[in-house]
Length: 323
Image 1 (cartoon, rainbow, N blue to C red):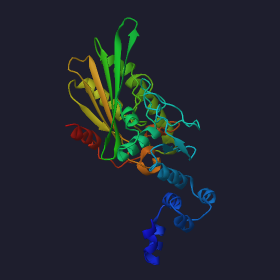
Image 2: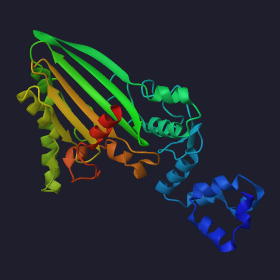
Image 3: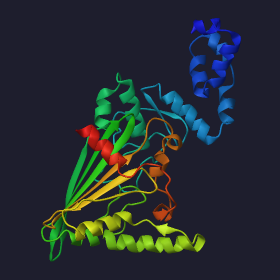
Image 4: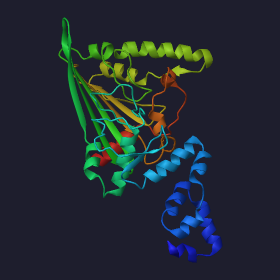
């Protein structure tokens, strides 16, 4: 660091002016000379930041510390808890709820800190690698629903995370089987809590379309152009109609691709989703906020493309790296 002081003053000042606040803080801890250069009241400096920039400050500090992560709720660093994984989620000390969904499939609750910690540890490559492996472990859960006077329904959910080109990608898969005809549970029983915008809510496709259309009618009272998003429900209906054919669709509001296929026998359906949760950084900088559920019916309303992702590109990225 002493070599910095041998630079021409104007160049030294130019370098300092380009630094983020968290970089200044880190350098201020490295020696007496730089402590003098970056001398300031740090509590006062943080208090003057917007909530977004304050979180960027803590995220910047967390990015170089393998033992800490930045909480987007309390804007503080928390120590990494190696027992906290998507399969065994633990609440942070501040009690913040960081799960992306209200419904967790089979106990799998992927949270913002899981993704940011996994991306950081993958980049560093020399710390907490056993914990990284557990963060990235696939998760599988199966259950059977007994029905009176009807065949039983079996559902298997699989979540498989992967880091590709510095981005956190999650593939989800739901396999639904019915001994007679899988159209019955698809239309009347299933819940698919995938992305907030294309999820199948209620009980089955028919109920999901009903509630989303009610939400759409409410939204059109304020905006006549508002339209409910029922792309996944329509994809499932088309898959029932065209057995053995993969029906694809993509979310218009977050980078998520879907594929739905009903077997030619009509007794099994497979629904897959590929989510791109972005790279390292704060939720507002990486696009992670696009995946977070909001209150009310606003998630189900088409507000025009927001994520900018090319439909089908996330699925192709996954498949290309899997070969």
